[in-house]
Image (cartoon, rainbow, N blue to C red; front, top):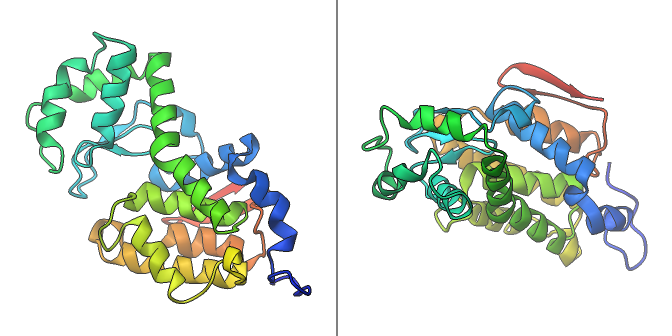
Length: 256
């Protein structure tokens, strides 16, 4: 339930000022965020085992791979391999850079098959590739989401809701991007930074997120919102404190 309003203090915000000051970028909370995303992306909490993950899941984005679902069709996989190659020239993936540039924006495997998946698996044994994945995850997804969440006065759960949305939808300008989802929410409710109620705003944001997911068949299962983030919100767990129990795609998960 929302906190009781205090004179001059927006409902729900005062109790979470400290959480917003640290929030999802606290190392323990960041690890929880990685586990939550991994439960949805890979059906496991063991996110550190996903550096070598790669498959085409049929969502029109080509290959999806690594700890955050870098895609050959959306540019973030290309950026990752470019960073890795800058740090480690001659790595197993470097020879695929021309092909990655060609397939960017498409679901094509041209120039990647048949050896790309084996090369990805080989690269995944290199600590430098793991670090490159961590750094690109933070630069493209995690840091922008946390920064915007804090600017909106949101606590840890709200910052995570932003992060999970930008992971799936990207930070572009199309109708289902993170920015557009946030704008849809802002048209319904004000965030704490604008004097609004945190719970009401997050409800609006999650509603907008569900709408965006349903625009794409590959994302039409909205359980990562309905039986995960919405559960935490209903429990009033705006700081995303364990224990956490949730379901994604019918599988149950627990963080103690």
